[in-house]
Amino acid sequence: MTTNTPLSPTARQLWLRTRWFLAGGAVLLLAGLLLAGLGDNTSYPSLDPRSPDADGTRAAVQLLRQRGVTVTTTTDPAELADAPSGGDTVVVPLPDLLTADQLDALDRAGHRRLVLVSPGPVALDHLAPDVQAVGTATDPVAITSAGTDADCTLAEAERAGHAEGGGRLYQAGPGTTACYPRSGHPTLVRTAGSTGGEVIVIGSGRFLTNQRLAQDGNAALALGLLGSQPRLTWYLPDYSAAAATAPQGQESFTQLIPAGWHWAFLQLAVAAGLAALWRGRRLGPVVGENLPVVVRASETTEGRARLYQLAKARGRAADALRRAARRRLAPVLAVPVVHGEPSGDALLAALTARLGAGRTPGELTALLYGPPPTDDDALLRLADDLDALERQVRQP
Image 1 (spheres, rainbow, N blue to C red):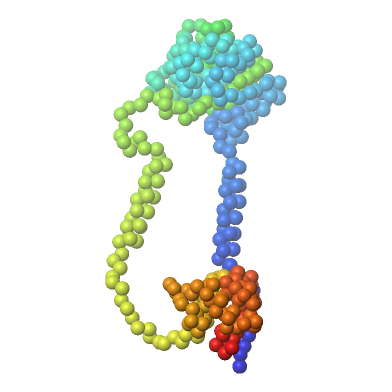
Image 2: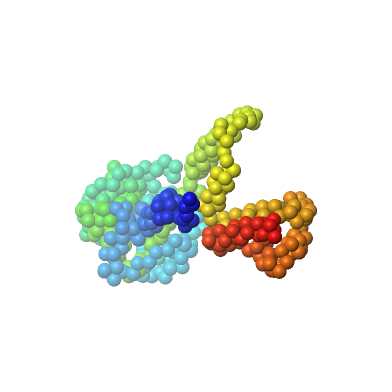
């Protein structure tokens, strides 16, 4: 009794085959969505006028724009010198990051008001020589920002009153206006510029930030210092240049290696160790063993057929069937076999002579050397046709 085994996979078989691929695809999709969502977050440095973070200054810029001040930003120091003067204010955080030539060009630009945030000795020498920083460039004297009385005659400071002062401390020279003193030194100094404008030196821009703007008189002080002119240009410094401008001491080899490379070297060391353990295994000589059971040829054939079926390798299965049929037919037809394969022309000629009009040459060529079957049913028909051909040749 024979049973017909369906060749098409069932739904359960398809699910068992593809479930891990589907799970991997789902994980990759979720990871991509997560990375895309995280990629929308933009981080800004401190005192950035675009930043809504606690240490950003977007709130102050919005207040200035509501009062009719045109606010622009730039990352190019050359644009600071080329900006239109006579009715503008320029804000430069950390001006010591600029080169000497850039500072001189900024000084010659003749801006109506130049606001320097936390300038050091280098920037003060070029832009405000009447103001001296307490301490040195490598060891500045600074203090935590806190509410402080103005204690000066500067109009903007008098209107603001009690506001935050701190950061770097300065020494004000003759002809300057010193405000918000801390520890006996001012944290805000107004001095005349070399081209007729004025320079405002502030030790810290913390009172400008979104988090502190509403405290004490910080908002009034910010609007007074930055909103006195119809145009405001805010320079966005290149903070990566701080390492290049800071004096460098003698550094060891490990200090010169970027921080990210330490993790890379650690990963490479772990990978090399695992590869050494993997390749260091001792594989002994090949040992031959007798099979514990005798496997029938029919079971081996059926197992290989199922592997072909799972892999959908109809072309390889058809080649195996045709090659075996040609090798079995060649001795019957006295066709020599060279290198395991009989000559195609000789085999077809012998088959045509043996079968006569029963089989045409084109039919024999398609059967023994034709294209691979397109589906499982075609593969079954090919196997049946090859069996029929062998029976016909052996019993003409």
